[in-house]
Structures are given as C-alpha cells and as structure tokens.
Length: 117
Image (cartoon, rainbow, N blue to C red; front, side, top):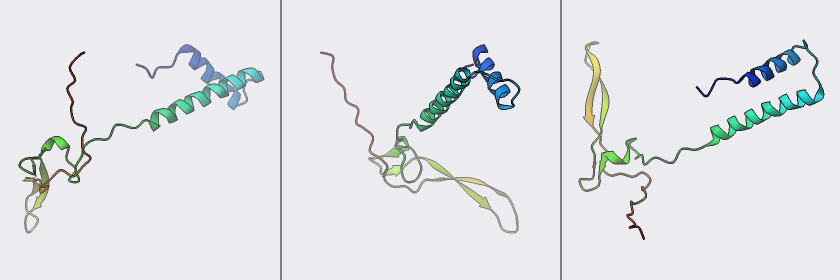
C-alpha cells in the first residue's frame, strides 16, 4: 500500500491543521517547511497527471490495429447493435460485423530484428 502515510507525514498534517485552525502557533521555519512540502506534493501530482500514455493504434472505427486484416481489407471485430421490436417487444443487443474496410489509424512502427554483434 503506497498510499499509506508515514508517521512523519501524519505529524506534519496534524501540525498544518492545527495552524490552519489557529490552535497552535508554530515558528516561521516550521510553517515554511510545511508549505514547501505541500507545494512539492502538488507539483508531483501535476507531473504524474501530465504523463502521457503512448499512442495506441486505433482505427477510425474505434477498433485496435490487431483486429484489421490488411490482406482481406476488413475488420474482424463485432459491434453491438441495439435491437427493439415493434410494439415495445423484446429489446436487446445483436452482434454485427464491423463495416470498416481498411485500417486508417496511425501506422505502427515496424518490428526489426537485429542480430547481436
């Protein structure tokens, strides 16, 4: 569990809450330290949120590159189609073939084999 607080962090939070509510008066150095720690945590959270995942090879139909067959020029994934019958009858899902005929997403990098030297 990486989200658990250390005893030192708990003490810092208690001191910050006490300072916030005016219950305890602490020195300028301690308050500066607490503010610096809060700023470091805020910047780390922003950096973590800013990390981008690598782009995925997803076609315009919404399916991954692995579902497309370049030789047959078709998508082998199935879509769910909501079906309903006249007069409020049975409503459900029906699986239909994807209409995509060619992969149009970002081109994946080729796999290259390099023998050891």
